Length: 193
Length: 195
Image (cartoon, rainbow over all chains, first blue to last red; front, side, top):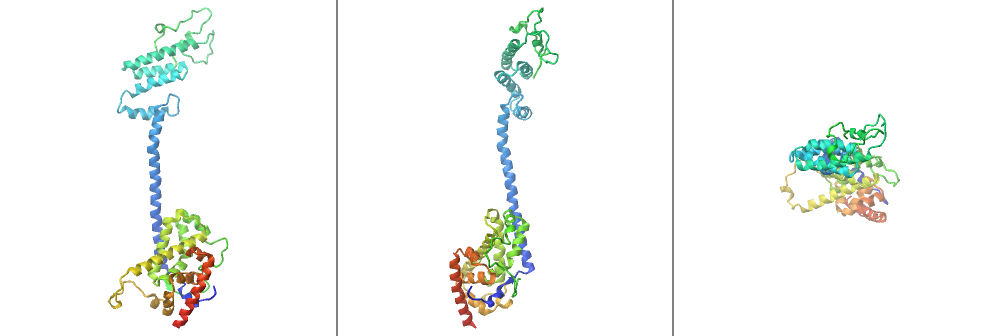
């Protein structure tokens, strides 16, 4: 700067305390207003996430099978809600579950337990009972095919009683399990899943 | 009401452009809208900002309101602020400058009323009489162009460096030097003429 102006120094001001306080109050008030939308935005984001996530989770849960992570959600949350509108939802879910597990090669002894559950749920629904019967036949066939041929099964092996019946000691007759009529009735000590 | 006092040795602004700036510490706090950061920045800049605004609009109450509004705007835009302490100070002076320009526009829109018919507004204080501001100085400043008046105030009252002034004014450093020279020559002539 080529010149100095001492006359201008009178413009150097020190803000008085009352004005400072007024300014700081205004700043603080604006900061409080600014914080409110932030909290509101966060709550809105959370609410939106929940609203979007719930149907996604419900849909995934509905497709789950016993043993899946979301299966408890299906049993405890989704089905009770749907049952408000459709009282047969439990039976209508158990039977397709059974059929999908059958297709997924779930162990037959585990399937047997689920057959029992499905039958309990669908006892009043003839169409579903018919489908359960078909599944049970296939389960029994698999159990028959997979029965190990040995004399002394290990004591720790928890096998279905039908499978145990098929253990063929050298002197006992072989049990033919291919015919449904020869089968012992369900609930006869079979191991459920 | 702010007092007009000749203050010796108070560094309101910085005349050197070193890399560290006193406000650098508070920039992050400003961005996160921290009450403490705003308090510190206000305390560090309020005197200079009010001095500048007062020199521009010649009315203390208006100058204080302009500075208050600048900080309110800073709160609103703080999360988007991208800059360091130097940039923060330049932002504040720029905001006050725009507030002063808005005040000029408001004044130019007010209809001319004969002075003897205008009741003195409640709370209005003529800064020249109340604060002992030299009427000749007030008259000289009002005869400068807005650009020259701004440059003189930023460089000689607030003490901003040429770089900082360039940032506030949207000019190059070279342009600040040459325009300030012209402003000083004009102001000196006006002051001498009124003496």
